[in-house]
Image (tube, rainbow, N blue to C red; front, side):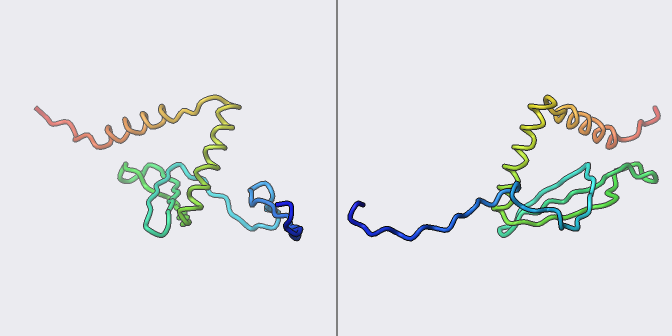
Length: 121
């Protein structure tokens, strides 16, 4: 409004983005996952990343290592946005992912692993 006194200048705030966080002093570990599961409670979202392999003794699947990450539903939403952006960049650079092929192959392997043994006639 023209008759209002000038308000004091607001301090400049930067949005919190991944691009303006200094990761140079972190002490993290790398973990390779080839399987993920997720669930949610009223309070958090949990991601369980696993390194799954075939059990040499039993022939089934076994998780060799796992990492569980718990986060707020809000951060899970931000993660969803970040993953969509990353996958969009991947697809625009390298082409479509093989997700349908991978899921189809996994379903076929699971079905074959759970087939009853042939009966002698």
